[in-house]
Length: 454
Image 1 (cartoon, one colour):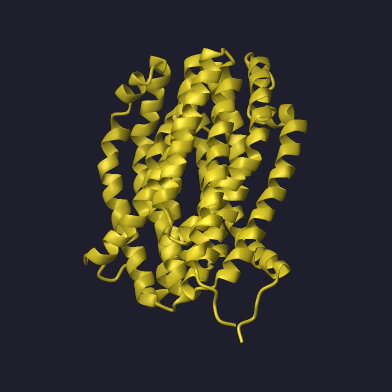
Image 2: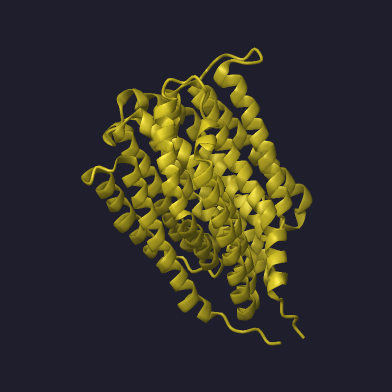
């Protein structure tokens, strides 16, 4: 007889699987945070330039990451079905697609300056950003491969190693940044270029670590044996799931990247404040993203076993945990805004008062979208676990592009609310996505999973 898991059992299982994933995402976030903090110490112009460059890079990265995200539910479902051949095939084709995509995207990273100018960014900021991307852009190759392999390991519930590999990468990034941005420990002072080199080195170390682990600890999957051999059936299966996931990622990250462009229209100080506020909200988002990954894995397992009762209870449990985290971060943003923003600046920076004023207002808006941001990413995780990606892609695109971006422009520039208005548009776009995606999961996708026999 199949044992029915209780809600406390679901909470425990989600915590055991999810805490290392949350830690891994926070360590990954620490890599970007280190860049922001150290460049903020180096100068506001450097911070504004890398904020812009990072937004540009992640637009391209997160679309390609769709192939890694596709591997996670496919491996989780195959593992529930005890189909090790499909585990190997889906992971390998995810790696193939990532390499192909990175090769196609490299020209956009190498020649980014005219694109940034076309987006009406200040020429000096665009020039520094393009210099950063000419170096850091090569990191797209290892970053996407790491995404696929981390998804493979997480789907097999090897979440501890995902955490530790990312922690090692964060340490490498921090020490290399400290040496190369400021010229410490006898290294040359390279500023923004130093940050780019540190980013590229960090991605390379991450890839080496995750490949060594996969080959050494899990040789039964033979991921890289005859890696060159094509597998057209699985290639198109991963492509079919990965493209809509990638487009959903692109729609969401483009919402935030477009907000960075709009903040750039307001000047260097608002853009720098935006970068700080976005980094802080990204930290709290990592909590929800880790839970979203758990939702994907456990929904994929439930799909493989055709266990709808397990799926429904697990979905309720992970949503409640996300809501609790949202409430805690709302309290933090509303009560400690100045202290949080001050972490990113020198005490004697002449622009500090202006950045504090703007940043505090942006964090107040960020508190508004904590609930809806968490809800929409949890819904996406559940839907991806059921390999339902095309309709959610349309829902997300409409929410972010037809609601979020026009609302940001309208409130920010037509009504003259400046940065607060731009962020209010983000709130509306995320709220729309949360409602539509949750409705899709509960009223449509979950109905296709059968109840497992007792």
